[in-house]
Length: 443
Image 1 (cartoon, rainbow, N blue to C red):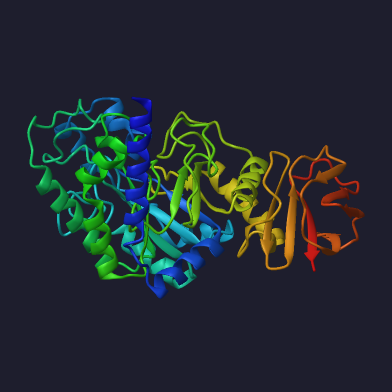
Image 2 (image 1 turned 90 degrees about the horizontal axis):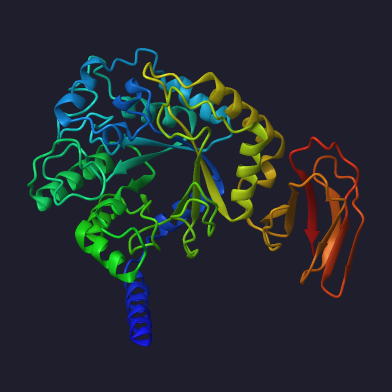
């Protein structure tokens, strides 16, 4: 029985690999992927009417708020302090090269002027402004790329049926037309692709319809059939083949996707329980929060330290991935001062050391808990993250070395390379240093 199951798995994986080859990205798309990898650092924004309740973005389902009661929130959502110019400038000050914002989260409320549904920020709030349009214009003005997060999961729409495993206590009718919901979803996605100057899409919620949370070939196929993602992805690339597509489904990439993402984990890690995915050939991105919450949470004051966030930027780059760092604006549209301070501090570090991050790829020295490496052509940057280490012993180093210096002041660093073992004697440095960068020039 076990052998038969293994054969089935191999066949399904083989079919998946074959299917992937059917999507042929255009030259423009491949160039956009390279730009995405070069950018390395972005701002994630989770913001919606749920911010009023101060209990993060899952409050509707976590508190089982009925649809007709939740629909009261937009009527007093009036974020008068929202300033797209300030937010985009903050992203730039933090050293970020792109912004990904929730155009529609799981609650179904559109944070842009959707023509498909009046359940949106322009038609259904006293604010009556398209914040996505304002961000689009400011991103253009300040040279930042803009991505659209879109939730496939919808706790509000009456045709989201059969149900998944979330949002079952919000009072939707126990019936619905799934095909009609997919038409609704694709119509909103199409209007975002056609009417806004965006760089791509960040999808979420695919996982909701899977009865089993495991990543078996059967659940993968069931999810693909249910969502019909191939037609959605084709529609996007038909509108603009340059648009990049990523999906937070916690599965191996599907045909038509242009980057692979990892939620709250570095590529291949599994501290969350839904990580541990095999790493494919697509560009990579990992996303994380500054505190524990994505959306604004009044009681969440567990903010990560500046050093921890800088190390996450470095570790992501050393694992050949971008880092997408989240903020959850408050109901008035402002970002918490604790988050602003941390973002600016990360930006100050990047202003000094960004050469070792931007435009790099994961280096030839494999990442460990103590150090990671990034690389541009013949320049290898070894980021030492453990400030207690005095000597590095790196095995199986097959390249020839021209010189080794400290990145900060270009002073020479003693090293020995013999029979594939590289030994680097680290100079004394400030023990409070978050990262000692060794610059290795290869021959």
